[in-house]
Length: 234
Image (cartoon, rainbow, N blue to C red; front, side, top):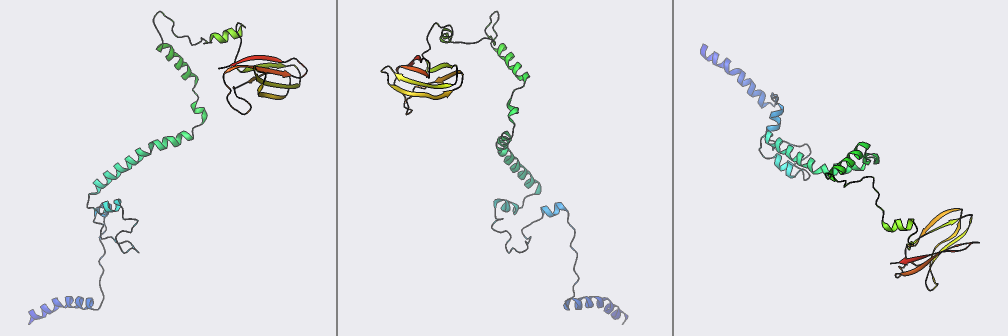
């Protein structure tokens, strides 16, 4: 008899718990707290997004979302993500350099005195020949025709017309052919005292290029004599 009473007392708490479960009263078990590593490495296919019926939306259905659904170790994913980021940064380097050049001030492109001296020294060393002077940085190269024109040994047949005005007056510079026909008017107006130069490009009043030959440039100064110059158009 005593054994039966002991068995009833042992089964009584289990019966009470079963009755509570049938009445709708449940005891919630608190979820175990997970570490960051466990959260990133767990299977994420069963994760629910609030307001989204499917696992991924159309915007999220990309190659990256598909890759995330693969069962890969977190270390491998991180490695390939870093590689992709590196490739992206390398591809953007030329664009970044181009953008940076747009904001450089003009003074940054001017060489400093040290660079100029080094350049001259490098030139002298590059052209150096033993027992011979092959490089002269202070020399001036002048054509023989310019020397002859300077000393008056030859005549200047170019389209440059130089003249001098002593006082404020009306001046007209014209070009005419050897048939005494005016083909172009370079200048017509009033000028103050001074030295001037006008250049004829070999075209007529309408901008058409004239054939090669001899032409005359004439400077007509009101109240004074006219100055003429021969022009050879080649």
